[in-house]
Amino acid sequence: MSAVMSASSAAVGSMSDPVRALQHALYRSAKADPERRFHALHDKVFRRDVLQRAWGAVRANKGAPGIDATTLADVEEYGVDQFLDELADDLRHRRWRPLPARRVFIPKPGTVEKRPLSIPGVRDRVVQAAIKIVLEPIFEADFVPCSYGFRPKRSAHDALQVLIDQSWQGKRWVVETDIANCFEAIPFDKLMQAVEERVSDQGVLRLVRVMLRAGVMQDGLVRRPVTGTPQGGVASPLLANIHLHRIDRAWDASRHGVLVRYADDAIVMCDTREQAEAALARLTVLLADLGLEPKAAKTRIVHLVEGGSGLDFLGFHHRKVESWRWRGKRYLQSWPSTRARQRVRAQIKAITAPRCRLTEPTR
Image (cartoon, rainbow, N blue to C red; front, side, top):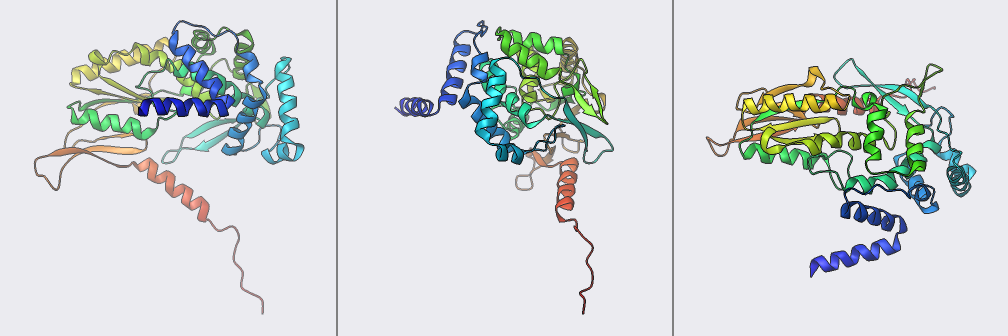
């Protein structure tokens, strides 16, 4: 009875929300036919309600302006309706051309490294959000449970729970890795092959291609690399998941252990060291097939035992300890990692830093 009521509620919600109804229809069609390639999607991207929803997502996310210096406030002053009408017309007549993204570098807490961030213009972020609205339900129908990053109704805590559960079940050899420069290194041709597995609409494929090839502007110069889906783009996490999905679907958990992937961070929970070594070799081969490789400095095999070094995953440090309540029982304890604490301290310092020098009051 409750299942029927939930289905009824979902149906009513979809009827009152045309964008949600569109996404449900795309998801159901993709789920029903895993071999289907969608050929009529371009008109969905410039649907007025889809663009309105895309603008809402961009507005809620705030964000800095791109190279054209146009802010969200500028768009609101100009008139959101007029802005979206003009954008829809450009998309309909295939006139939309994205500007290069503005390249900035932000520090990685706890390291001397800096992470590149690409900031598209507001107009281009809205288009990316609209593309994401249309494409995400199609590929969500294919994505498998081992993937947790940047997916609807999935979170880092869901991924962490798998680590805890598998540890309790005896899988205490862990392959810890992340993908070297993942967002910057994804080859365009291999990424487009992955998108084309489900999409044949040339209008949408063209939008994705020109979005990828828009390039970045740094120090007044525009660079147009042949790899990467720029970190900072609205659609980049979805495109990265589409590319990396080919690892997830090729993974054999019974042979190589339980894979847990959160975007470009991954662990594999294994029964033995031999299985962990085989899992790392298999993961390296699968990444190479996609034009990627594990980051050497962050790749290792960890044994979760009392007194061991433990591992960092998704902002937490995990280590096997003895229970203080039940002697002889051991469990996986987690607490914020050193880098996560440094990140919080840096944020607090930035918020509480004095904005001006205090002066003595005049008498």
